[in-house]
Image (cartoon, rainbow, N blue to C red; front, side):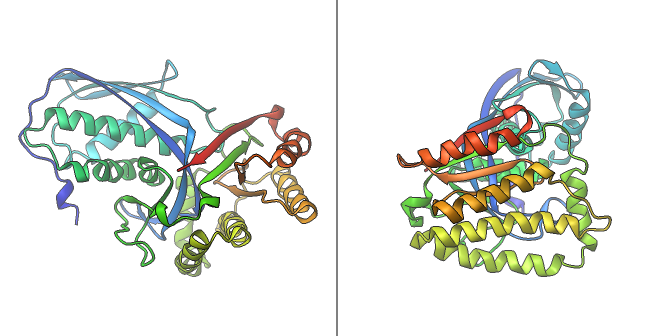
Length: 352
């Protein structure tokens, strides 16, 4: 099933430096729960962000003993280096040269760490792109151009599941679903963005930083708790059902249906956390206050302002990027930002 991604045993290594950048993404239909080797329990679809990116440079020193040294914004991160070493060992069948040298990896994000924006997605996406650049340099026979990005998505997935979706622009699908031709559990594929109504192709995503810092329960632990969650199987079926609904919404421009589905998915994600054993809650008081204010604003004004959540307390506030959104931006500034930690917000857009 992964034969096309196996690496060629013939290669010529040399000292090299490569760089890549990769955006993060925010899921609309959520992936929560996985099987061995980062296989998702249900399909997901995400918007790829524009400004929130990870920039990574990899220095490869050929024929030195295998080791990894990592720097995040200039600070050495030994714990992360250990994680990357294990990751490289895991993907060696697909890049046979990868254990033949020493690595110095420099990475930095254009957004705050632990801000509700998936740095693991952009980080492993950028790293996978760097590895594929090295692979093209070292390999005697390069893989076909048609599978280079696909293989990068495959490799990124093995580091962080949602990272595989960051390799493409626009709407991106990961996980096998009958609704999307060519979809796979092994890598992400771009959604047919030509079939998306223009109203969904230019959006603002303002991330309200309710809590900056490490989560009380990591996403890895949270995924694992789905194994014994009594509602898991029904949730996995619902994700497939929601794909069929979303496909129609995206083609027809049904904004009301889009808002309903996206918010339902966000709340379902956190409901699953609350129904785990042991249960856990990542939302905070201000998270709920923001949600209630958004609902009230939409009820009164009738404008397309809505939210989604990642696995944390911070809120992604979504609204169309058009010239008539001053009422929305004023409301966010005056009513929602005071609920954040020190008025912090990360402003991004989705365009495709």
